[in-house]
Image (cartoon, rainbow, N blue to C red; front, side):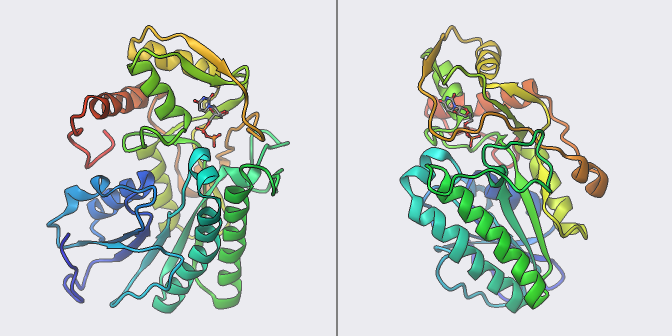
Length: 333
Ligand code: UDP
């Protein structure tokens, strides 16, 4: 990767993206470069992958630093925006890495807020619908406080993100750092890891290999799936807005996991069947964002139809499975 020298591009805004080699972080990096930012991506590559950003090698506006953001962050030069996206994000990953998940949400958020304060940068926290836990209110509005089991299998992620939100608000109140909080609902698209255990890569790889799709429980639990490009558009709007409170960004098209499995079988043209497996502990039974605030304050709503987004994503996994590196990684579509 090229090294970014101080004052190389004095007029361009400078963005730091933690987790910049991950699924969403790398799409954000693409988008910011398209918007004319200089971008410094930081990632310890525990769940990220340099393949997601390697197409920017040679772009002198881009720099990659391999670092764990729970360690002290030193960067020379100005920074205008800090986007804190680093974290394991799939239930399988954070079950395997509970301490790292807690550390990146707590210590990593502290360090990145410290960086933002030092540089006078605006800070955006990538939070999650998991702060609502297994919600007792439906759909979930930003003023709902959630129903989280702190000692359950998801506790390490949910509580880390809740702590991260509290720390973000504290830096805003005590130090006057300009902060934004996005609560990200289920998102899918190219660059999800084939084996991260999340439902989209799991079902797609099973469908493409003609294996049964592993639906947990009876498949009556619901999720609402947002395509990555839509999500990044909403998050960029949030950072550039004056909205300080948390904002849900996600798709409102809620469906049962069993029906989602059938949709993936249909769209991929697979002959796979459905295999029912035990439901994991504390699996939220229903989830749908209330996006009234995003619509009103950001003028944002998702645009990509589920079938279109799924086709693009299936195309990506098809190439991954056949060992051919997918082309056109620069954009989701
Ligand atoms: N799920 C499933 N089969 C799988 C993987 C996940 O039925 O092979 C279900 C899971 O139990 C949950 C939903 O799909 O109800 C979404 O799971 P995911 O891990 O993608 O994310 P979550 O929204 O639970 O954080």
